[in-house]
Image 1 (tube, rainbow, N blue to C red):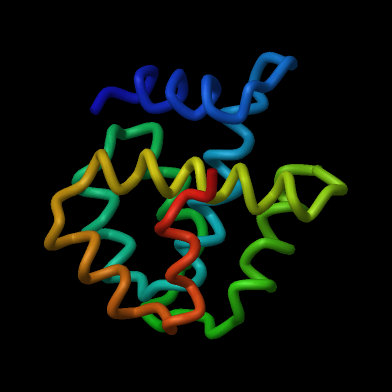
Image 2 (cartoon, rainbow, N blue to C red):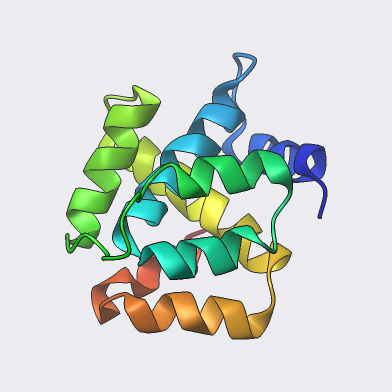
Length: 129
């Protein structure tokens, strides 16, 4: 999947009004995901993404160790980075980005990411209607 296609799909689903909102949601989500998974796994995931997304993902974790935090903390960090005050918006945006991420990478890579996350992160991979 190309970068602009990824951005367009996120933009369509979160129905933003301001230019750049989708890209901000993508950056916030991928940076936070990069913090939560190991540096090596972030590199493996990034290798399957367009260059613009690789940078965002790899910026989250500069060490090999994953930073342990809860799903609620994940959403709080996304909201803070994205500059949204509504927790529901952060959940929706992060879930939308993750839905597109699952379409952009192989099933094996997705399984590797999910193995690094506690079970409570499962909703992140299952977009809510």
